[in-house]
Length: 220
Image (cartoon, rainbow, N blue to C red; front, top):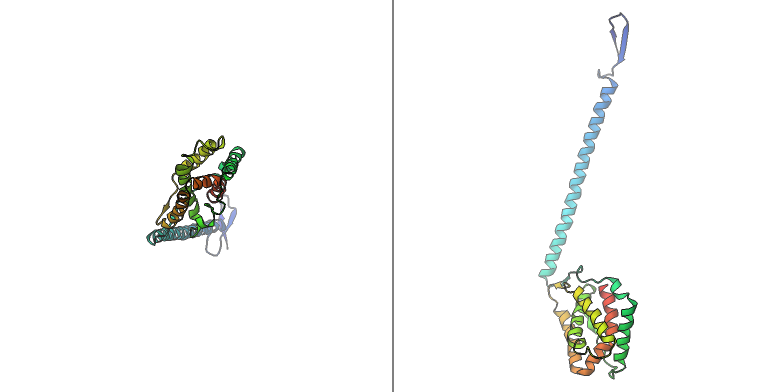
């Protein structure tokens, strides 16, 4: 539709109106505003949906954690049961550790017994094994290495210092819930060492290379 208007000088000027009596520019502005409002509404709906999904996942995770603890299932605190791989990549300490193992093995006459083997990890899942090795490390230092710190020099003292640093870094490593199955396995290792007496202590020192490699495997 076209609208005309006579000007003051008598000329006729015109402008176009649509069938609703509105100019196209005005109608376009109104349509854009409607579209923008619809987009805002859609974005708000999507955000509510995402927030609801995230809250559902979080609630389910918390419920599962509580259920595991109530059922007596061990839950490892993995962020604390972790060592940096660089701890096991120092050529000098690797050399000292394996040289100590070699020296002690030369004095070990019992070749039928192994302390750090598959039996030690029987019934223990992967997420719990660093915690188990922490227990073995504590025992090895306190009951074997410290009392024999004057033997197998010059390697012993340097290896003791290295292992003690690892122990300090794992001081916050623990698990929630029942760890009796882990303690039972560690206790069998302790009993074997004590039963063998001095020979058991030498064997534990001779397996320091296995202790090193297993801690690297399960903690780093």
